[in-house]
Image (cartoon, rainbow, N blue to C red; front, side):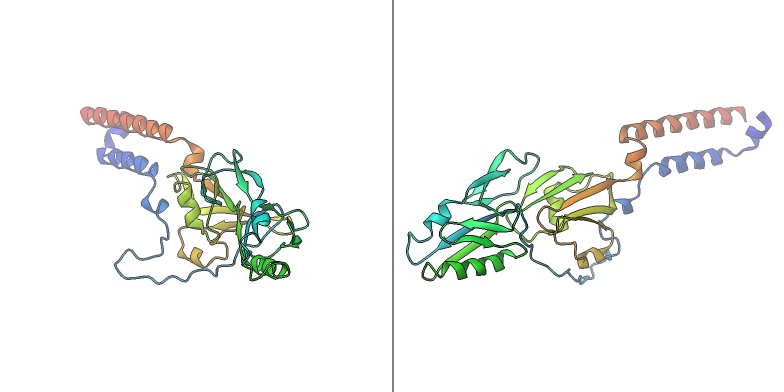
Length: 277
């Protein structure tokens, strides 16, 4: 046995030690976004996905503001933007982005009932289900014109929120003041992926108007994601960042400890074999 060990070149043990160490370390490719885009100074023209305006669904909360030639005309509608629960900071009547404390503050607006209607003073029940906020605005202007002269209407989502979970720095639910938000914006709110987040296998969960729920897989390593119909988010979308195999098999501390133990043991073995020879 000793003769066999003596005949093995010491260099083999050094190579083995290096391979074991590198095997436990992730390459930069695991952390980069859009791997197929060149690193050179040449400009790469990307084709963006078609942006489809979010549509109004049951249980949405709408901020509705009416201005008329008569200063008192829309006061009743504007005063009855009633509160519902949410989380964040207020700038006037607009709800700013916030995370981790959903349900502790109030969102002001009109709740869309199960029939898809909002009940407005004077105007009555207005069915806005399946409409964009721009289409809902046009509809409310038509109804308001019966009672007011030259009404101007603002309609916005008061509870436009997305949820980011999994391997991100700050998982939570975020309320967004801007209806046009994409996947990268959402990850930015959540503080980006951790080093254990799988950039090739994000899960987007989206609720449909019929009550069903669909899931889509997204790959941040490929610039084709910019063309995806799921690049732009809808209200109530949920993003789950799956962990990599490295996270599943061991924690970072355990991994570092194992590398240290193996390296130390091999180093001692190499020293002993060198002295035996």
